[in-house]
Image 1 (tube, rainbow, N blue to C red):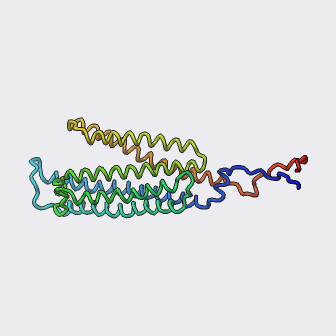
Image 2 (cartoon, helix red, strand yellow):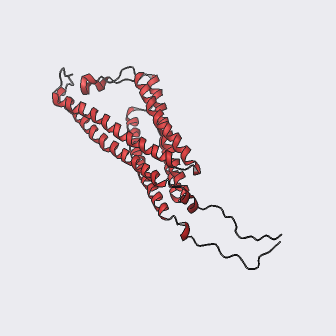
Image 3 (cartoon, helix red, strand yellow):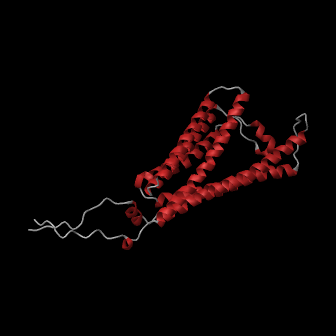
Length: 283
């Protein structure tokens, strides 16, 4: 009996994986929906914050230098205040709706290579759990915001110790969601053998961890008000930088997917293996 070795099995390459995975364009589209949701939130919150700030400034001016409480607010102040609150609700609905749709589109289409699907699943679960904890914290407040009083109702806002703990838990859950999402982006970069972007995500997570650790230290320590205000301003500036860095990374991974898909070769374009040698060994 004679045998001839005609083909040698080789490990699958990135090109082989991508030719079998037809879902990456949907993942890229899902990341685009997430970016759109964040842009809606940023633009809407800036406009709503401007309306609320204008209402508060008008109340301060109308109360005079003595800070006398007003018995009746001007109709223009109420329009600014309730218009800002209404805009916050609408923007949150459309913004978070777009983000959730983007998450879902990525989740149902991304393959399981490098644990990408499971990382996104954990991140999406935390997206829902974090706000739910914050809603529960709202019911445990000692004294909430009285919207009937307009901007003056913001002054009576108080938190109970339980509400503070729930808000911290909600914040940590949201931080875990972001960390898992960043690891998902790293897994996507590794699926395309883009190690530079994968390292970029790890650098981001390092600075994100530093910010979270510093925030926890500030929360549990008792600092002087003037020093606390300075540290809070620095943490706010760091959070703003990390947020826009986060948006940049999402866009960068979208470009990574687009570039990787453009490099996928058709099986007919792949060079055939070298011809088998003429001096085959027969047994």
